[in-house]
Image 1 (tube, chains in turn brown, blue):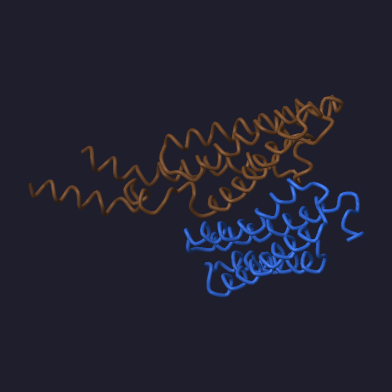
Image 2 (cartoon, chains in turn orange, cyan; image 1 turned 180 degrees about the vertical axis):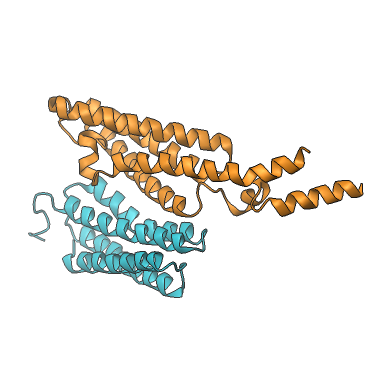
Length: 168
Length: 125
């Protein structure tokens, strides 16, 4: 019984920010610089959602492909915002998938809009690599994926001493 | 729209945004000063909403009414949400969040003016 108590205490001491602490204090992904990332993603989620809702409900026939792609982008931004703000490994994987989808999307749609501009009579969020949005759509997923890699690496470092002392 | 109020809210939002980013750079968390600055910006934005309602009630209308109303709502919702999200991290990054929110408000107000008179609709009123 005493050995049990000692073990838990040593685990606590060698674990500066274990999963329980992270659960209370919010996720590491949404902390520090990640909080700014979530802010920008949230702005894009709101902007893309409302823009595509207005476009599809009022002038869908004008540029169907561009508006459908904008709606898809809106969904990706919402998923990325929620996943980046939430703690846990599962949300981390969702965030990586969302950022990767976003990067692939902005590169594919950006290239398509440059090659075949007739197919994009009206601006979509991702057309011309997001030039209508200060090119933030193409920068954001790169920053997102970089941040997710770094925060994952830090979590592994933080968890390692806890695992070693828990499994003698 | 009332150009003076729009210019004032853009200027206030930019000043507050730069102050927030300055505090981020100086490694300071959100304090009373930044919250007061955000409050001033929000007051000007609320005045703009009231002015917009009065102008529309007098018979003028935006060139893109749906977008205008959405941007108007976004202009007053952005800062309260930004303050809430920034206070979740009492470090320099909270100040950064508030700074981004202020810059977003400035962009929203610019867009607000564009959807009001994309063909010079308000010059007659």
